[in-house]
Image 1 (cartoon, rainbow, N blue to C red):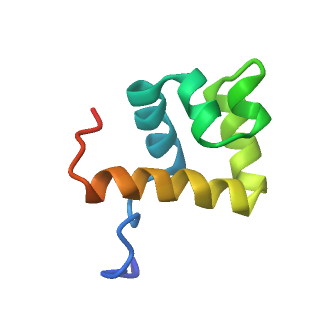
Image 2: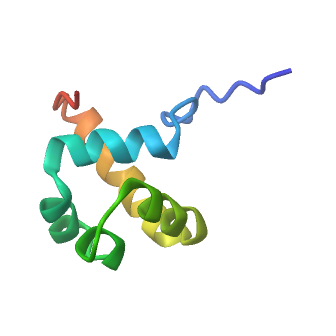
Amino acid sequence: MAEQQPNNPLHGITLETILVKLVEFYGWEEMGQLIEINCFNINPSIASSLKFLRRTPWARRKVEELYLHHCSLAVPIP
């Protein structure tokens, strides 16, 4: 049975979805300025970024916080 997480605003949203939407909104260059990690600044790709973010909790947290920040401001992310 699927566990409900009513207090988790990211429940049901994959890291890939979050990353794709942020990159579509900002682009790689601005993402690299907002969150200074090499996978956004040097030969960026969704696949390499996902690999890094899945292994690096602090970086993943920053990406998730950026996504939540824009959701709370009601900034539409396509």
